[in-house]
Image (cartoon, rainbow, N blue to C red; front, side, top):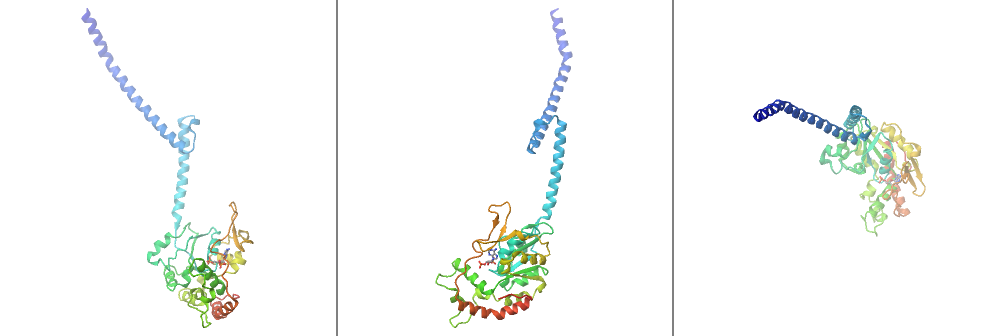
Amino acid sequence: MKIRTEWNRVLTIRNTFPALLFMCLFLFILQNYLDSNVSLFNRMERDYSSKGFNVRYMSNFKEFEEKLSSQNNKNNNIEANITSHANNFTRKLPNAIIIGVKKCGTRALLEYLRLNPNIKAAGPEPHFFDRYYHLGLNWYRQKMPKTHDGQLTIEKTPRYFITKEVPERIYNMSKSIKLILVVRNPVTRAISDFTQAVSKGEYNSNVTFQSKAIRRNGTVNMKWSAVNIGLYVNHLKRWLEYFSMENIHIVDGEKLITNPVQELNAVQDFLEVPREISDNAIYMNASRGFPCILKQNNTPPFKCFRGSKGRHHSYANSNTLTTLHQFYKPYNIKFYQMVDKHFAW
Ligand code: A3P
């Protein structure tokens, strides 16, 4: 009897074993399925939260998925736009160069031109064509700002104007490049140049402008760079071996101070960009004695050029000034003829 009861129990266990096994298997699969969905949800939740959504307010998975997918689409579109924009947003060789002249207002001109959104300017002077030519055009390109198609790239390096090799080198890069030359009275320019050299410690304090500019025999020391740079006609002659005056625009450095917007209109026309620098973008700052750039939403709401721009000039006696004016006169006249423009120097 006892043996029979035991045998019946064994039979019961044997019959229910497959069902138990099936149940275990089912539970195992179910758990895995739920786990995978939970981790998917967690991943999506993290993803979604990182996009700035509060997932606690999502009523169900479907809404969550829909929002995520629409957000992803939006992001993909933005990314596509950024990528296509970035593709066109590249560093290009300049379309225009301010080639000089040193101490005639080249920095002010470049900074003013930045006010036109069609123009992008390299910040520091690249000195490619005079100093770093051996580094190649790719090096030069890296010094340029990134521009969209249609924006113009410009740089300024005043030493180009007086460096013999530069016109040919620029010509080899681009025959149609636009060149801008800022000039001012060469006597004032020479004093400005000397003032700068003194402030940089290039001369002892006992060296005077007169002692550098005028030789003992009373003639002008035209080898002195501060004087020589002002012989505009001699330097420009070398440029005209490669470029015509159609490539070159002359800016009046004195008018750039007294009427900057008028000078800038002419430069923008020459560069063939719309005139976008308005009259009230630049104003004469009485305490500075020079024009400053108005910067709305800025503290202070204007930008003046400091330090090396607009210095008090070193003293030069009237005899020296007269001698220099006489010396420059014939060169100036030839220069006016060359550029077909008159200045009151
Ligand atoms: P000074 O310091 O002799 O006055 P560059 O930038 O080519 O070195 O030229 C410097 C000259 O730019 C200055 O010479 C100054 O006369 C002139 N300049 C023109 N606009 C100016 C401005 N808005 N602020 C200061 N200097 C300006």
